[in-house]
Picture 1 (cartoon, helix red, strand yellow):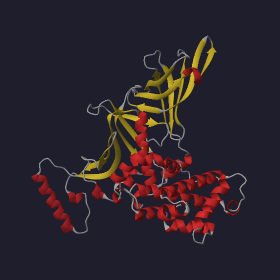
Picture 2: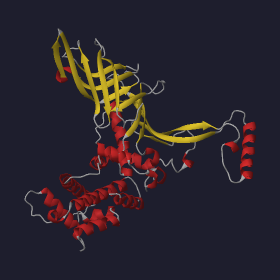
Picture 3: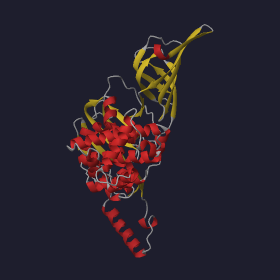
Picture 4: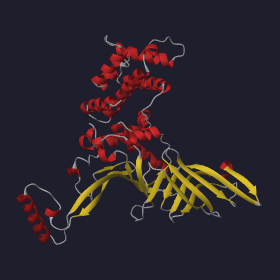
Length: 440
């Protein structure tokens, strides 16, 4: 399976279940354009619709396309030399490789890897977390089933004496290690040493009673959104594998391609992401089980913030900045209502959930040096943007760069509130804001 951030093309013969005859088609997968299916047939009828198409690729591999296929809507018909042909192109919801999946099939088990997830788990610098591959690194029971983090690795068997595989400037110490290893091998007949070359972490979801692909996507999306929030960068699956039917029955996992439409700029943000383990919030220094359990219950309430991170491009035009400032200012105002603050509706949330770096930046931009004047300045800017015909003051003096930083400061304040709701400490929140605001 190629990773989901790489384009792929497949050719094969396809059929609508319980209908004849088969027809030729091509599947094009792209992280920026989704899944496109092109077909041509001289026998398919124009009145056919289906939610599932099965196929066998030229490699011999089975596959399934899932979507709403209305051939009479998206097909063109041609008559030439006495032959009528039908051709069309569809956008699809999901491509499944490795088997046939039917409309009423459920997913009982899925395992997936995420961008930046390896460094979130700190495996590059914290080898002590690798305590074997038999048990999960993390496990949590949920309403739908179970979430766990499992490890896989690349291992190389160490053959011969350890002294030929290791270097040490103290030959006596190396000789003692080699002697000890010989004693261990003679004591334990069935024993071998293996060098850990790499460790990969995957998220595994188990569904009690099974889940539809839509529900599976929903839970995967919640976990991706949480990691995007914690790392302040877009996070998307790289590999997805699913198992249908009962998890107690062994079957080879099926490979799944979702229909993404990620912009090229967002892909650049994903590929150029820094090491998660260098940031103040990662798996090692937070209570991940507490945060994840809270997030699975409340995360969807913060979709406007997580979507702003998940679709980050690093670029704004003035229209987008106006929209962001109005949205974020309104959300900061909503936070003040939760704090039962009616008068200083922008000031108090900023003082409570924003680090001094962010407060100082807003004060500098607005020149709001008098007490309680910052909240009024933010409210005035919001009203200038939102109300037609409102006299302009800040819109005439603020540059696009100023508004970009104002938008980010307000967004960081809201993120500070969300992280606080999830149980992240104030120290870690302010460290998070300092690190990520500096990169803007």
